[in-house]
Image (cartoon, rainbow, N blue to C red):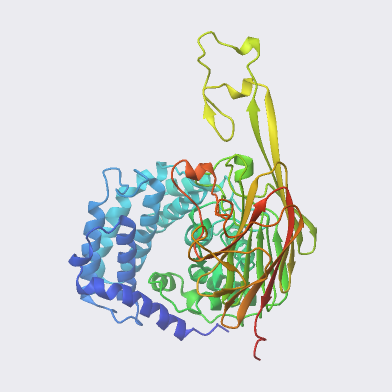
Length: 576
């Protein structure tokens, strides 16, 4: 017995497509200036889907056809002699062009089955695809997810224009193995690239190539992501190695993948995630084309499986722990790439946030710890150890050096020594050839993730240096129990000395209490030199920062020091 169709879902996706396509159909020529090749192709795909769908207000519309042809003309103009597309910072980029070709090929499948009215659209799409084919077969990549986007484009080209060379190239890339770890995370650990690139590409390849192992990889990633979904319907990104590591990423882009896998497997937990991804409404105009290409998406979801609370998860490969209860959702992170790589770089996990805490609308977005040690930047754990269930220790030891005179056999009469980087500074001093006197500084953070919050014990050892713990609360709440900042602290920035502090939004609150176990008293609000976040010289040398925004509370002093910080959440009892 077949599963009935979800007519409400179908109407919602059609509505989202029409909201996007209707202005294009009404004035196609006025909508083309400055539009990138990727956006042009996505618009064509949406226009063709809106034309094809019986649930669309543009079904059978000649205006939609005219708009598609206008956009295809602009898209062909953006195509260079190589068949690749001009535009963007990646010059002559096969993978960037693959994003566009994936939409071109999907639009071709939709247009080819629509009758003579779309004949010119079909021909234009075939011309664009054919011009790009050779460059995509021969082209290379420069990020892990590009391999799967490029493979998906090659597979789509083969679907419409069969050519064994296309499949041979796909097999070359797939022979490297999918970059998914034992926990189900892709190597870039990025919600953006998992939802927009790796998952949809691997699902397409699984269907075209009949590769269930690729579908299994996507299911593993979606399963891991279940434990990364936060109470505000976003996906955790603090551990990401890409651009999304400093922002919030919505769950909504995961909707088609959770929905498809829930329908195919009958898994209620994936169905729950699909419902949650659609809970804020459906606004993605691309979903209509996806439902036409994969009609399974239109079937009703299996009965959602209720979320079991409390629950906890430790993703060992990313060194990311979470605990969820009815009153608190905590995230602890110790998996930065910076301690090992000793640099800030695109493609590395660099976010120094090591704790988040959610209590309904009251959200502690980031807890960070700065140290004034050779300007080497904030605490980023080099090691994360699980001490017991929901108890962890994060550790980082920083080492800097002073260098002695060169040994006689390393000296040069001309004084022209090679330029070298010693980890924090570069100079023509031949650092590796010199004896060194090291200075070390160790920070340990023990965290107990509780049902009602988090207990932190912070130990700062080594020479006497200033340190500052920064707690960034999401805007919109009221802080009570803090010393209001004068000029050194500033608007929206407070100092906590003896506490307690309560941050409240409505009936939801997070309470902070601090106790100094060893060391000097905490710094007062007049110590603006201590009570500040320092991003470190990798940012400041180029005038940059990775500082947070929001309501910030500072706890600071001079180490060595040991202190405990108790974070407690309070929320009204849920109504049943």
